[in-house]
Image (tube, rainbow, N blue to C red; front, side, top):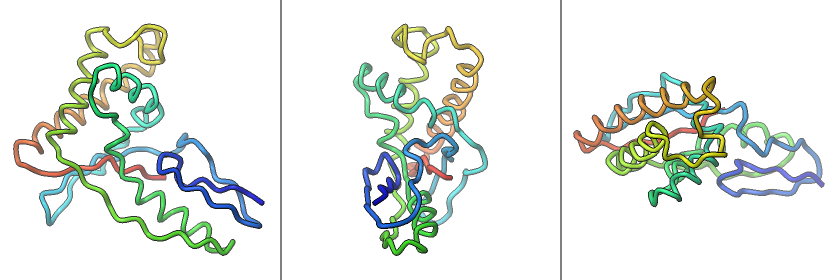
Length: 167
């Protein structure tokens, strides 16, 4: 028996007689910020991989700050679709996942709080989010700044957004 986790943050676990075990981390996946006004969607043209790689640390910081977790805005429907295609040959039936959209104002507040804490140094020392790792910290700040700006603009237009986790 193999255990297939699809995807990890959704908590879907399926045991099968044959097949391969899919990764339990999202190491090679990325996040696309997509914004929708109802009919059309925009975005998805920029990878935000550092936000995904450091998601557990950003979620811990969000808890400390008293704001919702960054991962609470993830839409993993693309991952579910990808896993479903890969599992067809092992007779595992995975129902399609509906896309999930969120209020851009709420996302802007969370990303803004995380960004502020990282900029002013109030992110707890001793975590992966402190200033001692300048090589990737700059990439994380750049991703958060991009997302915060886009979410602020989307919130002004009463649009919705999602952090689409893509393989």
